[in-house]
Each structure stands twice: as structure tokens, then as C-alpha cells.
Amino acid sequence: MLNFPSWKIWGITLLSALCVLLAVPSFLPASAYNQLPGFVRAIHINLGLDLAGGSHLLLEADTSGLAQTRAEALEDNLRRELRGASIQIGEVSARGGQLSFIVRNPAQVNQARDLGRQLAQPAGFGSTAEWSVDVEGSRITMRPTSAGQNQAIDQAMDVARDVIDRRINALGTLEPTIIRQGENRIMVQVPGLQDPEALKNLIGRTARLEFKLVDLTATPEQLQAGRAPVGSQILPMAEGGGRIAVQRRAMITGDQITDAQQAFGQQGEPVVTIRFDGAGSRRFARVTQENVNKPFAIILDNVVLSAPNINEPILGGSAQISGSFTVETANALAISLRSGRLPVELSVIEERTVGPDLGADSIRLGVIASIIATLAVIVFMLATYGRFGVYTTIGLIVNGFMIIGIMAFFNATLTLPGIAGFVLTIGAAVDANVLINERIREEQRKGKRLLDALESGYREAQTAIFDANITNTIAAILMFYFGSGPIRGFAVVLMIGIVTSVFTAVNLTRMMVALWIRRARPKELHI
Image (cartoon, rainbow, N blue to C red; front, side, top):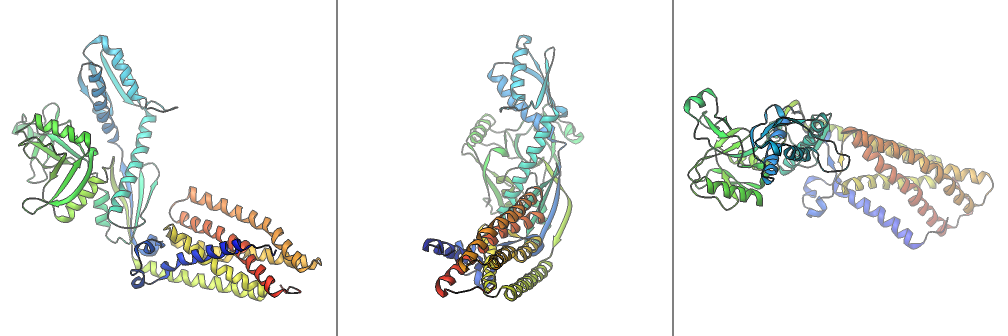
């Protein structure tokens, strides 16, 4: 019991003090908090939507056009592979989400089929084919398999979640909650943001940027009727309400953009400057060299922003998008472009705004509940165990600060269920001390000496303490793994509280008891 070396005493003391210090910034008022150094301000607890207020959106993805997008991407890859193998094809169709083409030389049908199967089978052990390949004479048809389509939807939703996360973080807001729900829904909660319209405009934009050559063969009658020449499509203009014909194949897409920034044009108007990656720069330079004095269209989400003329080759790997922008809309577009495009269209099916007043009331009531729970436990422990109740009280207070300090260090988000978990942890934190104290009493009733009773009490109680807390930890892990939102917030606080309560009960209070016995050398225990 008295075997507490100096390194252990210093270790427990410094660890407890460090956690208490980490909790301090979270208690400071805003005026004092803003005066702290930057690295200290980074250590704090973030408040969840239910405490800080903010915007809540539930988005649903339209995956109906995903098959068509995949077919068009497969067409580009297939053309490149067939061109490398010197296989000529004709009558290529990507309608209905399936790819069909004719091999001009019948002797090369089998070779083309094998190349198609290679593209249909992704790399990796145990992977399933994403496309079925059927041959009818000289025509090869590639249709998406159900497994491939499901995998594509799952990947698209993961990408959409990541894109939304990058766009929101670009606004400077902290700790957004972005969670997939079901197969095609994403829940977005942004604490502190009270403008859901701006949030919807930012994350709802697909931001599919394309550069396509203008089809000059289209007649005014075709444009009026909405009938495009073969290999082209009719798209609306953002300004003027007119229409324009552009080639279906894009000369370059937004996937090859490495950066996008809001800037100002020669006339002082807001514009967006973009920069391409290496492959995009080379392709853009080659296409503009081959099409000097021809117009090309800058298309965002199937709307033509502008159709400038290629006066000379553009070799710098950058371009400028102009239109009827304000500084705010240009900045929003730049954020959307550099964060990546959404692979699916998202629509808002649920919208909710939480005011900060409700969160302030929740925090106030949560603090009151925590104080009442702590005081009730302290009074009980002091009345029941005397001096050992004092040690338990010190451990209980340190435990509360340690929970807050650890959460602040990891920038965890505190929600209303998290406050409930904190109150529950405080109430249950003395369980270990009760077990230890009652075990010591039992050993004293058996007639053991003071030090033997203390040693046996702590040693024998540890088994029950660890068994009980391992069970609670398993429950918390399951809640965190299978739960979402509020359930996870509760589980996080509960897991941290379990660790800190065991530390303070088994190590901190034991150290205080050992130091008291060394100093006072009591003849008997009153517990």
C-alpha cells in the first residue's frame, strides 16, 4: 500500500494537473478566450447543434443519372484502350446507361471483347465485374451489373459526403456533423450557422464544370426546336435566355482542376480563376491549339456561363470564368470547384434551424443538473466515509475536469446527450470508491491490521471495478459504432468518463491515502 515511488507520484500528479489545465479554456468567457494564443484556443470543446444552434439539413441523392455518367466515363476509357490496340470502332452509343459499339474489323471482335472485360473487372482480389460484356456479331454491348451499380452508388455517396465536408470547412465553420443515412441520404448539421439558404446553395450545387467546343453546324431552326446535330447537345445560356449547341464530348472537365479562386477581371468585375493539373493543362493546350478562332463553351451544371472565342492557344494551364457574378457568388463557385464536384444531385428533403436560445437553456440546465448531482454525491460520501469521503470528493472533482480536458484536447463536440452522459458518469464515478471503502471495512471486520486491510481492500476491489467498467466500455463502444449523432455524443462522453473514473479511483485516491498514512502513521481507521 505504501509502495508509491516518486516517479509514480509525479506521474499521477502531472497527468491530473495537465488534464485540469486543458479544461480551463473551455470555461473562460469569450473576451478572455480571444486573448489566448492560437495554439491554446485550438484546445476547446465544440458545442453541438442542439447547444450552439445552427442549421440541419437532410439531403437525398438522385442516383438515376449515375448509370449514364458511368457509361460516358467508360466510353472515354474504352476509346483510349481500343485506340492503343489499333482497333477501329463505329456507332458508339451510351444511352440508357449501357455502352454499345460496333467493331469495324470482324477479326478484332474477340480482342475488343477482352479489352472490354478487362475494364469491366476492377483490380483487386475477390472483386466482382461491374459490367457484363455481350457480343452479337460485330456489336459489343456492355451493361452495368447490379453489384457494380450498388457499388457505384455507395462510392458516389461516400464521395458526396467528403465533398460536402470540404465545402463546409472552407467556410471556416467548426465541427460539422456529416453522416450518411441509408443508401442515398446524407444528414448535415452545422453548429453556429443560422443561414440554411446559404448552406443549401453551397452544398447543393453539383459543380460539374466542363469545357466543350461549340458546334457551329447547328442551325437556328435546330436550336429553336431543341434538336442537336449528331454528337452534340443543346444547352441553355446563363445570360440572355438563349440556347447554344455544344459537342457532347468535353475537351476538359472539372476533375482536372487543382485550384479555383475568386478574383477580379480587367474591368474590375468578379471572376473565378482556375488552374488545371498536368494532364489537364496539356489537353487544354492541345485542344486550343487545334481550334484557334473557334468558340468554346464554359459549362457549369449543364448551363453555359460563357462561350468565348479561342484567339490564341492557351498554354499556361489556367483559365478564367466570367459571368454575372457578385463577390459572394464567385467565392461560392470557387469553393465548389476546388472542393470537387458532386457525383450525384442532392435535394433537401428536411430543413431545420435551431436557435441559440434553446441551446443556452440546455447548457444552463445541464450545468445545474451536474452541480446538483456532484453535490449530492459529495454529501453522501462525506457523511458515509469521513476522511476517505474527502479523498473520494477530490477524485470526483478531478475526474470531472479530466473528462472536459480530454474532450477539449480532441476538439470533441458536446451535445445535450453528452451532458447527460457527463452527469451519469459523475454519478457513477464513485462506484469504484464505494467498492474499495466497503472492501476495506470488510477486511477490518475480519481483524486484519490497518495496512493489510488497506492493501487487501484495494487489491480485491480492483477485480470488480475492472469487470464492471469493461462491461460499460463494451456497451459504449457498441453505441458509438452502431449509433449516430446524439447516441455517439453520449457514448464518447461515457467512454472518456469510464477511463478517467477508474484512473482517479484506483490511482489518484490510492496515492492520497498512501501519502496520508506515510505522514500521519494512524493506529486505526475510521471508515
